[in-house]
Image 1 (tube, rainbow, N blue to C red):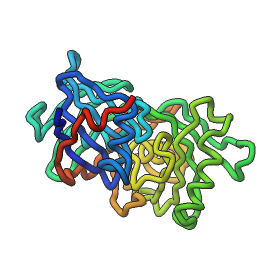
Image 2 (cartoon, rainbow, N blue to C red):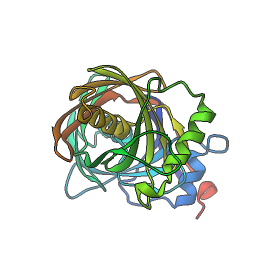
Image 3 (tube, helix red, strand yellow):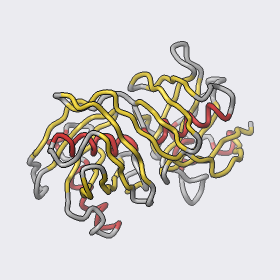
Image 4 (cartoon, one colour):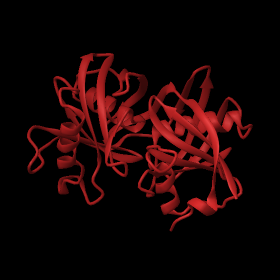
Length: 273
């Protein structure tokens, strides 16, 4: 069976996106094989667009290791553009995720999503084996945030090594966390980079990371509740939210979502379990 797909990226965070309204699904091994950058299509993750009784469609998101995750901010923006282009939804839509209902709007080159609250905010944590303060918040997935004078001072391998010391730290719970390092450029702008669980490396952008970073900076008094976040790939994601006592409400994320190319793969050749 030949399965068509779109290769998409949201600010460099890239995905294989598949219309799976037939509900066939994919085993974890096939997801990992497709996301392999040398032997497959190559991506940070894979998205299945499926039918939903509660919204215009359902987004299932898988990290490149084949594990399913509750939310991906840039993946949600790509899923929204994919659904609009495929006639599954209009320019405004809602779709189901494991983290709840997401609302989205296509505005020219920008895709805006409202992806739910930031919860469980914990500031100024001290973690064993990690120098300095670490902050924590949940936006569908957990994020640990470190504020640094220069987020990009470390080369990519050194940054990954640093992030791994935090990613699985017991102080963050058994699931660990994505790791974001951010530097503040003003009350309305920051630069950040993210190490993602399931990818186990730095990605060029992370949508939920931008939302948690913005929330942490606002609660630390370092930024306002409307923030432009420059990514590792040089793009900018825009975050707006309403601060709350445990994090943030009405979080909105906007940025580019682009189709890089389209193709198909043989499910029989690629299916691994």
